[in-house]
Image (cartoon, rainbow, N blue to C red; front, side, top):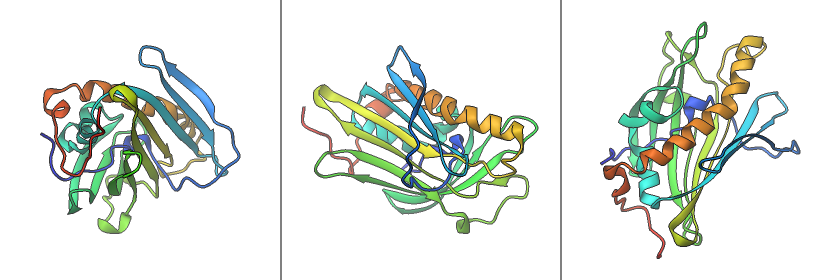
Length: 224
């Protein structure tokens, strides 16, 4: 069973602030044909790409949430996640975590401090695990680059027949000098490759017996 102290498993995607309104159109970047997963990106005013990955799968809401709460397993399936450490559990559905993200040479690995929260809409049953930066919770590590800010979310919406729509969304700024062509090239590529790899991997994670059978008291499963 996963630990009781959850966090938002999105920081391997190098995320930044707020889903402010924008008129920029979404661009379809890739489709994973075996699963029907689609990944879209669009550029923000500051040139940082925003992503949205969408798929459908057969899974229980508790299993999907439990997969994101299992911090020990995160490096095995979340794109470029090196480690995750729980810093503070406010409640079973809210807390603070430190996430370290691996970067390709010649860049230093990144660190983010996350304030995460899990909620469920009583009307639709949709479960959302959202997070944003909380850098004041831990002094920066001089061996790492602290991500300046971010916002991200996973939303699991129950559909008919036990199917769930999964939407993974975020913005991305890894810190450092985004004027560097090499860094901008990596960020632009990771903005769609990271969400695709992570959301496809989630399908395998929710089939693990301990995850598939997870029962979370704060998740209400829809009637089938």
